[in-house]
Image (cartoon, rainbow, N blue to C red):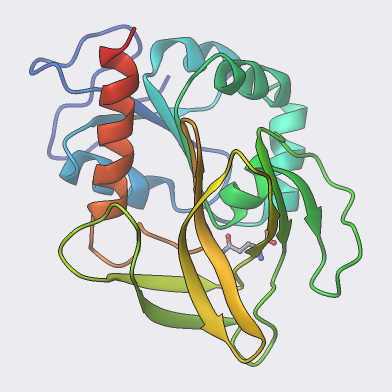
Length: 224
Ligand code: GLN
């Protein structure tokens, strides 16, 4: 595990954080890794980057950032991370997937035109995602989003070539949706300790989604 230089002290694997804060890893294969580290710290967690299967044993929770889901999936496969990720999450490791991270967590993903995309997935979330779902006109947009369980007004959400959740299973709770001309589209979900958001919560300066995740990590830790 590698330390990220920064203002705050970041413990390495196995070192307890001084104040008992949970240790949350950020999967560092591609994407906004440092931004997530910084938001996790803002949300009261210690943060480390995760690159190898053994890093997973040391963390209390994991964030899978946005980026390009095919690239992250292929790199995860190449580094032997795909099965360990699936196993750790199945065994209860709390995880937050954002944008491409949400796609990776889903059991199946579709291209924008609705045809199935054949790419490596962690497949721990009973949901089908549609990649680049909002179409070219609104490839990127910002939206003030009411998220169930997050107090203090809407979250300013940045969507960048974002997916949506096309279908979710009965164990999945929808936490937020965006209105489109064709109806509401699900963009934030939770299934047990798996949370997934179609937007980039690391980019708006608002750490409330990370804080909700850190709270969940603490609840899982407390219950052990
Ligand atoms: N469009 C990307 C994908 O399908 C996700 C975009 C993002 O993470 N910002 O993988």
